Amino acid sequence: MRVLLNDLRYTDVYRLGGALGGPVGGWVSDTLGWRTAFLAQVPLLLIAGTLIFTQVRIPQPDVPPPPSRSRSGTSTPLPLNSTPYKPNWRTNLARIDYLGSLTLVLAVGSLLVSISFKTSSTKGSGDDYRWSDPFIWGLLVASAIMTIVFILVEGFYSPEPILPLRMLVRRTPSAVALSSLFMVINQFSILYNIPLFFSAVRLDSSSVAGAHVLPYSIMIGVGSLLIGWIMRRTGKYWWASVISASIIVLSSALLLTWQIDSPEWITWVAQVPSGFGYAGVLTSSLVALMTNVTREGKGEVAVATSMTYMFRSIGQVLGVSLSAAIVQAILASDLQRLITGPGATEVNCLSATHSGNQCMADFSTQKSDYLQDSSFHLIDSKPRSSWPTSCN
Image (cartoon, rainbow, N blue to C red; front, side, top):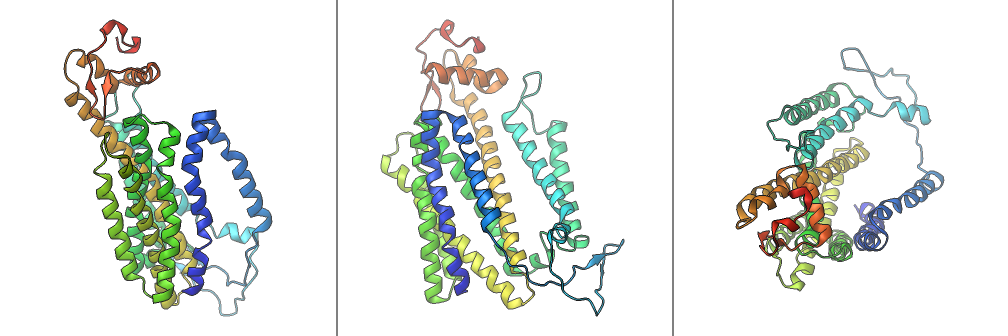
């Protein structure tokens, strides 16, 4: 456990990058444009890849030959005289679970594409996609089918599965996997919507929106170090996990109080506990998982670690896509209900068709004052002749 806690401190370098990413990215977007914010990452990624390729040396111990699979999908026992060997790059590539990875990508990808088309795309006719459209529900059905295929592949075919089902039948690994999934969905929903609140509701710049994520990111590093120190001193992690999860709930309740006219201090404070709790749950749950697999003595440390990162990665993409779908659905419904008065029909073009997207862009460009606050109430201050042409 001490070795694991000592290794956790190195993840704070990653936390520092996350803390600087929001405000730096916002500043670059405001000053040099959003394309530069993306292009600037290319040389950084090349430098990181070069350093990993040239500097990282992973010891390669002697390992037994991997079990083979018969046509029926069952393992073929190793002969008694089989000897360990030094794996090379060919044998390492052969150990990759290609079929499991492919089915997982297809399962998650089909789900994300269906949500993306439903929330942010339109048909060639200009109409929005509906959940009842064959293209949308077909992708959802495909996602469900590929999820079942992925489970079958991992359970009955892959010699070294990326998700060993034997671990998920045990209480601690399954609890850690599910808690990681749902917590990361929650946290990335918060990360996605905090900048959106400041840029779309309060009409702040990208720099201001990114700066409000900075306290959250800093507390991730602080929480990881503090929870790790507490567990090292006490040798206990259950209460640390429960308290950290409770802090996330408290922070979410504070975020619910945000309004367009909320005091400035609450917009800097509400998200801070969530970052601390997020780090606390990640750290304590990882220690719990490593303790469990170590006690089981089945050599599952590497597999267990990759399992948690797999569930976290899925939670990241689902957190952004699902929260975007919810925001779009609520916005489309509320626009029809909240926009009243003269010209309401014209304003509703903002959400009705693809031309509404262009209408929204035109309003943003012209600094229109037709929408007021987060309720989007109509200000009937200009005649229809002055509206953007895409809405006439």
